[in-house]
Image (cartoon, one colour):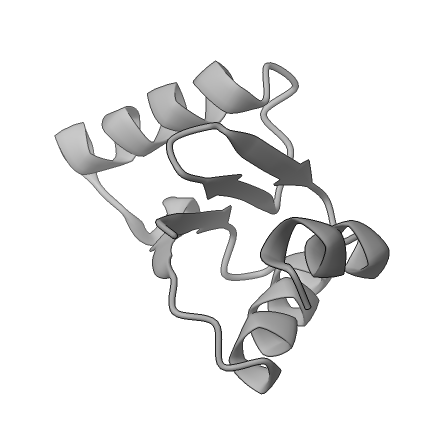
Length: 83
């Protein structure tokens, strides 16, 4: 399973999502979009918009969009991650 989390470093819901993933030993790639610069930041923003047109955070993308979780939703996280 390929998991990518797009988050903001200052977002409380993003911190809760990261903690949930870490507590459940889920491997994921993290992009804290507000800390990126230049083309890397623009590419991350394009990816978030692709899966979440509202551009809200956190946005968790599983297997290149097979499943997407927007916001912190523990029940949905458990469901999509099989926990």
